[in-house]
Image 1: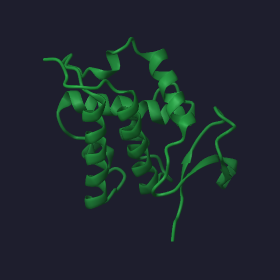
Image 2 (image 1 turned 60 degrees about the vertical axis):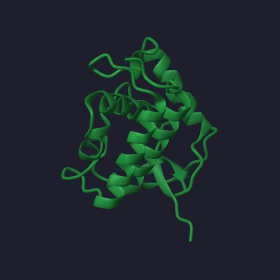
Image 3 (image 1 turned 180 degrees about the vertical axis):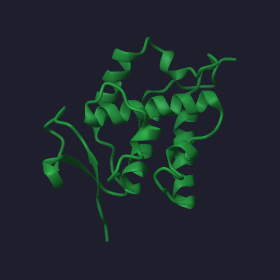
Image 4 (image 1 turned 120 degrees about the vertical axis):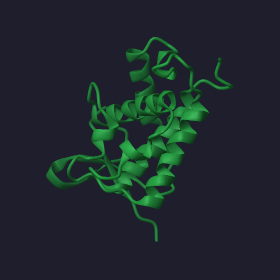
Length: 163
């Protein structure tokens, strides 16, 4: 049996398939083995171009570069940790699952921020707080990590980071 989860979106792209939900909020249906919507990746790419001087986003706070694949692997690992340990907002969520080397965690959070902002239309977002919003579901958090990993693989720099 295939089920769907829903991630809130804004009307940034009316071409995305939506379903009506509580309080008239638009939702993007996402199946467990879903294909990441192209429009979402494109919107996140536009946000990155507007917010960061390339390749600023792909450097951690120490100035060390982080590749797209490293970031995607970190996001995949966080999704695995949440799958194994369970997600409990305010007790065990993205804050704990994303814990790791500072540079890698920082870039991973930046990627997730782009995705959250592409979904919501917000000008900024802290994903480690986004996952604690009342009504947020574990499936939405897992989907955020999946989309973030897809974005990192697609848009992140390739190859070994420079020393």
